[in-house]
Amino acid sequence: MNKTLFEITKMDCPSEENLIRMKLDGISSIANLDFDIPNRKLTVFHRGEIDKIEKSIIELNLGGKKISTEQTDQTKFKENANQKKLLWSVLAINIVFFVVEMTTGIISKSMGLVADSLDMLADSFVYGISLLAVGGTVIKKKRIAKLAGYFQISLAIIGFVEVLRRFFGDEKLPDFSTMIIVSILALIANGICLYILQKSKSKEEAHMKASMIFTSNDVIINLGVIIAGILVNYLSSNKPDLIIGTIVFLLVIQGAFRILKLSK
Image 1 (cartoon, one colour):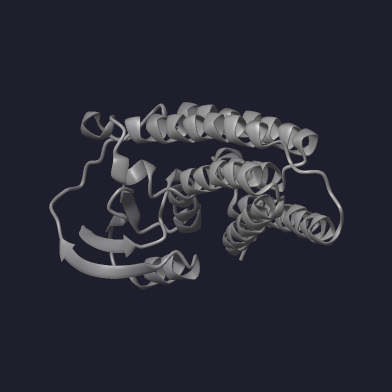
Image 2: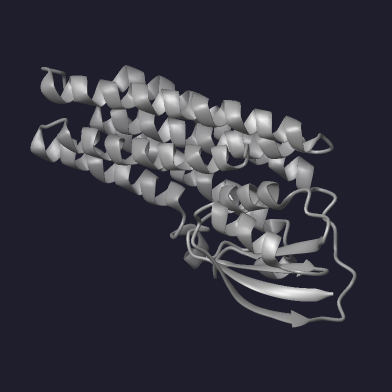
């Protein structure tokens, strides 16, 4: 058995972990994957050559880089029987907040909330594909990934068009208080998701690690919408909301392309 350590510089949260798991699914030489999200490290236990595994990781454009390979005597690994249940839990949280943020974003005229809702939907796609592909064929997984990726891109493009319309039009100011309150709730929801998934790893990692929580893209986005809401009120302008909306839509499209890479 060989043990290869990878550094994944853009692995910020469990959704990226699931992307990597799905990408490597089907490579028979892999015995186990051990993720260390706070330190952005992945240890792959495998038999034989690492070339195919390394190529697959690099293709995801998550900043994957092989650090070292060595032999190991470890051949037994703990399987988490609750993994599927945990994935269903975080999928449900993300879907609920997608609906909440999309609804309140439309009502409050906040593109930041609308964009953040699509980011929640993007994470839902990743967890959903993981669950739907369990026990399924590689072809099934690829078809689901392709549909999810293109759907996500379509929604983000519609969002961009709406941002441009509001930028050049005469729109009412978004409700800054709704932006702040809903984003704080979404921040809490993201923290709960990270806690649930990290709790499944081991007792030592069951607690919330600040280094993990505050390097997550999802949390940074939530904080961005909160700051945008404060600036909307302070400047009496909708521009901060449109700017954060644009940034998040770009991140959503970037995530969609990563999902599409699973379909190749």
